[in-house]
Length: 140
Image 1 (cartoon, rainbow, N blue to C red):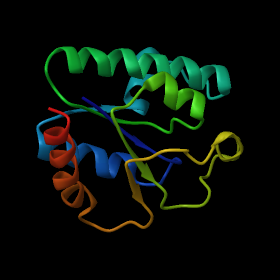
Image 2: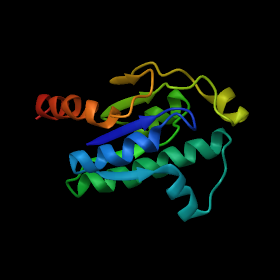
Image 3: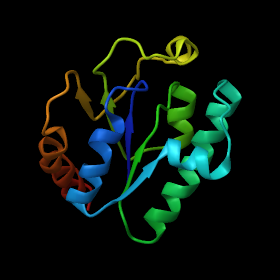
Image 4: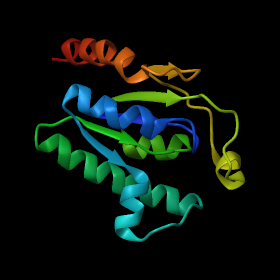
């Protein structure tokens, strides 16, 4: 299973995704860590598309190993979201603008999300556990 935690930079993606992955026994995959590993800091649309394919490839490997991939990255357009192909999408909609104007201009409101975090609260990851468990049970 691939869970996408998406939203603008600074919206709380990593703050939610890392402890959430730990709570459900998943594998946390962070886009900044992946970009560091590949030394690839291209944030134009082509770079975002390349990153979506890369993140999908890594998450698919985690899924093939029988684990749940909890992936946090901006995933700013419908095209990048389709490329990533999440089973479950969480939108961290906690800020109106990030500190990166190019990302603000590129970011598209998602057409479909499974869970929408509209405001930050300290136990977001705990709130999501039952939702994900229900989703997994439903899809068995």
